[in-house]
Amino acid sequence: MSGTTSSLLMSQLSPIFADIDKKTFNLDPKNIERLITKNTSAIVPVHSFGNACEIEEIEEIAGKHNLKVIYDAAHAFDVLYKGKSVLNYGDVSTLSFHATKLFHTIEGGALIIDNDEVAQNARYLINFGIRNQEDIPYPGTNAKMNEFEAAMGLCILDDIEQIKQKRKIVSDIYKHELRGLVKFQEKNKNATENYSYCPVVFKNEEQLLRVQKALNERQIFPRRYFYPSLDTLEYIKPKQKMQISRDISKRILCLPIYVNLERDDQQLIIGVTKRNL
Picture 1 (cartoon, rainbow, N blue to C red):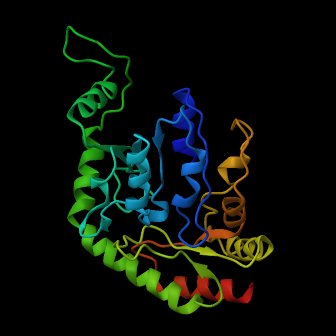
Picture 2: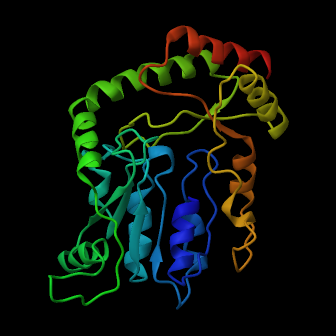
């Protein structure tokens, strides 16, 4: 994700990319080890679109090289891996609570940290570095959740199972109607789904642009999520060429998926998509 990459750069770290798996869209563990050097400090995989990474393989590599694992779990709220929350794995997981997410507090997010000292330092960081009224031992910022955001989160949390079930229905209809015409993300068989997104991959970019234009003309605005591929950004140094990421990013489009998507509207989206393939 661009936010993850930006946070590394702002911390004066150099992101070194490893290419993704073309079916799962997640970091391919086979591409990690050859990129590890004495300067490597952590592995930062993304549970892309809420699809759980190959956790055991990644953490085995991290253990072998004494590296931290920080999961970008922005999309992975309420995902289980082998019966446990996917957030239980790694040293830190980051969640997004932006308004477009399955669970949201309008804006913001959370850190899930498996270390009391690191967790305490994070609490200082989000509150200007303040330990108490007379002690400010760390630099920090104002990243606290306000009461209105907390209230929104509690309201949504009450209905989260119903929200997931309704989104599943929408997702299942897309898969039934479009199977064989577009490619869908291959899900981790050891993990549950949360139906955060419905990404589809077209045959080529021209096909994607044709479908996108036709939908836009009907005031329907699907998103080209994870486009462009991060390795193509001008400010990324050193330059690295991720062939699979570049290919998938040019062909992937997230179709509208939300609780109140009317059946007729979804059929319109499906019909427009089919006619423009």
